[in-house]
Image (tube, rainbow, N blue to C red; front, side, top):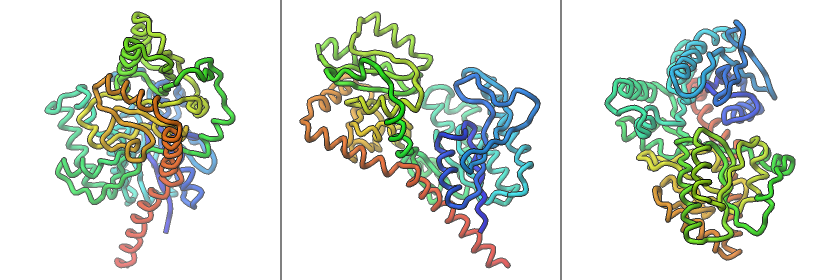
Length: 417
């Protein structure tokens, strides 16, 4: 049985991220893994290829990544679409340079659906099994966010592409728990669907917590109850909820609770201006910090928080990376997202009604007023459940899918010879 795996992810890179962790673990189990990514780094001006090379190849800890030349872009305009096209087209040509070790599995992840399409074409070229991974629903997410209309021509094209890929893939991986429901709701057989959420490298998290401190007066202040947010500050994160939560708590004269926000994004200035105009002294913005500092920062929290825009897609669950950092911190989390709640099911946090600032305040106060024994149990529960999402465990799930496909292929080959 050959074990050559090609993982296609536009934004993959060596050293971090979901597919690097999978690749690293699979390599140690005897697989030959190659990642194919774009030369650009999302949300930055970094481009690894600024000359005439079509690709560069790099290796780290037994994992090879082929970075395919793609034009630089800023924001979400036409240049970003061209960047996606560069990557998709580049995959089809650059991959020919690696024909000597033809893939047995093509695993294409949907940062955008063109990766699926390239993955399908490559699977046909090499007669490989095809795994399509859905991280965001295309185009359903764009429709829900109001970026395109459901009956528009672009939406119709994307819906057709989605159905085509779901029919042709040998297996479908969804990073959120409601994948089977979604596939059934669009009228397709869901028997190929598998669920592998995002995850965390717990060993790395704990190492960073102990070795990358972040000194900040608010974090070190034991006289306040610290509610911490880490992550982006854009439309999808809907951090207006946090500003309004701080305002309502101040109006209610709720003392000793402070919201501390780490991160950056195009809405940050607007949020900070609102806080200043309303003289909110119970919320503070700390800016962007290195990912390695996040574990230490979260170790100083009393409560972590996730908020998001109310959406019809919530019924399928969500898979934000930050929830696993939050769980690994061993502190409770409050969220206004998802009916598929890791928090409530495992009693390591609370989920409150989306759209209600009052509900968020009530949820924060519930944790704030908890007796020590109950609070401590929530902390223990968080540390327990996060082990289900360690990348070693998630790699077990992925390997089960790979072996299922390869064994099936081998059995088919034996019967036809």
